[in-house]
Length: 164
Image (cartoon, rainbow, N blue to C red; front, side, top):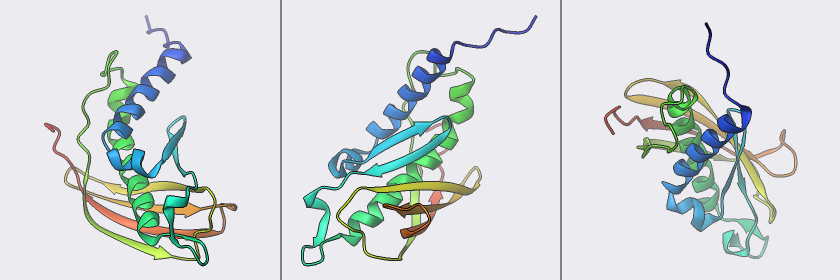
């Protein structure tokens, strides 16, 4: 006899708890004010505009370092989310999400495509390759129009061992 599917609310609560645990593992997310929106297995990072993010008040423009950090955080969250997805969906976390070891950045390349305007920014990442030791992730950021990117990046990560 097949197992009955879990109620959708139980699945959502488990996913949200795991995502909160991931976000809590990166204090810089709170400092920058980044929010992570989850729809099913897709994550979108949101960087709400704040005056502290401006690097050039004459334009004004979002600081390049803030843009790079936003892209890197988005890549790390997407990769970590992909790492835990199967265990989370299988219910191996029970009622509490485990401590999650985050991947470590090997290198990160940012392409600044246009000025980051003084408004909210959004980013999504795509895992290109993920193995036992190494992963490659591409990330894109936009503001008003998804097809008009203001920055993109490629990151390579050292994956945590399964014991971490």
